[in-house]
Image 1: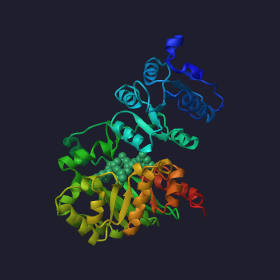
Image 2: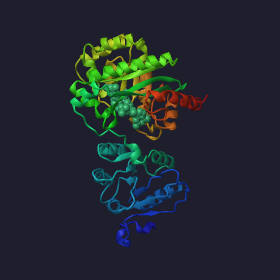
Image 3: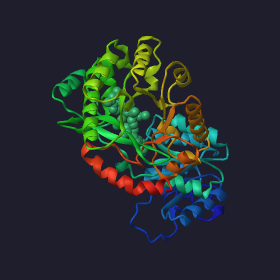
Image 4: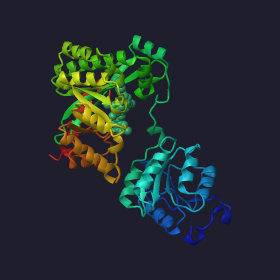
Length: 432
Ligand code: C2E
Ligand code: CA
Ligand code: CA
């Protein structure tokens, strides 16, 4: 469309849809799924520039709209789905915030990239504002959008079906959990943590799944909270711990040497018996406590009761490693660092994936690694999803990395296969 046409919604001019796809497909590449993109911006010059940039980057399906109202009408009428909306925040009439809030409550299920001349921190807050709705924000860009950053954000787009894991929306009663425990329906998957300098496997984190007779593999987000609320978490954690100790014994007998990490709930630490039982399980499995790290989720550490602190100190006296999990997401993370003798600081994935191009999370990531160093703790970054994340963490001196880029949580039978694949990638990734 011609720039001079952009002051008013297109449908009033031509009777065709308010916005339309433009540009030929000149990528010649139909192997890879490319998202269809809608750019919403009231500035005609910007709209044209972004549209041309996207085409030249190999995104053939680009639609433009010169106002939020026009975009909403287009989305209502559009035959083909839009995957990604690149949205300006400052627009006369309906602004970007209102537009996104409407979309957030609608059936639209695509992703959004925010675009504004207002600075990255404002956009970050908008991102937060929308956080609990259905819209998935891929990231925020300052105007004028830089090509490399825009490309990185678009490359993080995944078709929706691939992005939604099964079983996460189910909910269960305490009776369901009791039955699951009785029937031994728990399964452990393991996710590797590797050394960022040498690439060596440092440990495996045990992540519980429920092999449900009807729903298939159910992920912990669907049942851990209920287990904590109804008291089933003690039996579950003990099962996880014992099974992980047994598995570590198997790996040792095969000549493999690395540690294991188990997730521990705050609720577990309230029981005065917890340390004794855990110590006993490790001892009878012949596993030295130094090889076991307990990952404690920080948001659950905020209780004023002294009982959990007591358990944590005792665990440390027994030489278990203590990790502050999801660091950066709770309210008293610094207070917990002050009060608990943690040995490991595990930075939440929200500060890791895509950090290189994110001016807000990157300083937090670097600062957290600095804190860990100065407090003689091991730093671990979770949610390492790309090679770019991996190299950034090496540059800024993080100790260990975990995430889909290195390996997804896997069942024990897949571990030897993963190890072989990892050895093949390892030397290239550590530059040796
Ligand atoms: P967590 O301890 O933070 O575990 C990491 C979660 O992030 C896992 O989800 C893992 O599959 C996922 N993940 C790993 N790498 C990546 C990545 O590169 N990108 C992204 N986007 N995600 C990644 P999962 O297994 O669904 O576990 C969710 C949470 O459930 C865990 O978070 C942990 O807090 C809890 N949990 C898991 N197993 C247990 C357990 O045995 N006991 C207790 N109390 N909690 C558990
Ligand atoms: Ca964890
Ligand atoms: Ca975590």
